[in-house]
Length: 196
Image 1 (cartoon, rainbow, N blue to C red):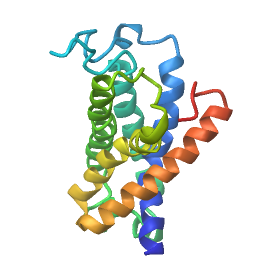
Image 2 (image 1 turned 180 degrees about the vertical axis):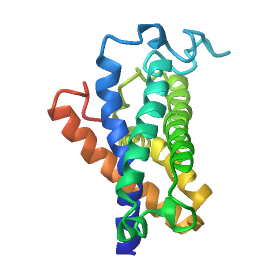
Image 3 (image 1 turned 45 degrees about the vertical axis):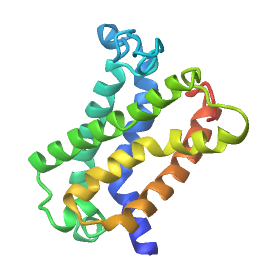
Image 4 (image 1 turned 60 degrees about the horizontal axis):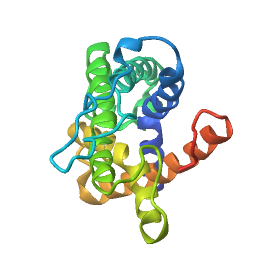
């Protein structure tokens, strides 16, 4: 199991780096035309916002851009056979530029799109964007906030490597715990407004 956990980290280093870069990217005064909410400010039938202001086209573009960039660079680093053997993406597939471009796009889409159901749910519960609830549900939403994107990227890994349900669940749990630690680090670096 320890080897699989090591493989999880090796496989998703590009996505971890992309997630950090998107925090910086979204604060930069560039691509202002894309810094608009995905839901275009529209409400659902319950008169609440669909996703909220924090889910923007700029963020989606950033996740795709940086996942592609880091996946291609990581692919070059993983041409070493020992590194490639620790990367789920290269166990059953050849490490090529075209393949890495495809994987990078899918990782970016998986990361950003799997955040949307969580945002949709939080808007239904009238939770302020970027915040979590208090009381009993707080732990659940802290976990969900960190795990939502991991569900997506682990699903992308499963497309290219037969994880199976148990390893997929482990991937999500380890990924969520890692995400929590990274968010704490980003908070202390003043790249996040809230720790959770």
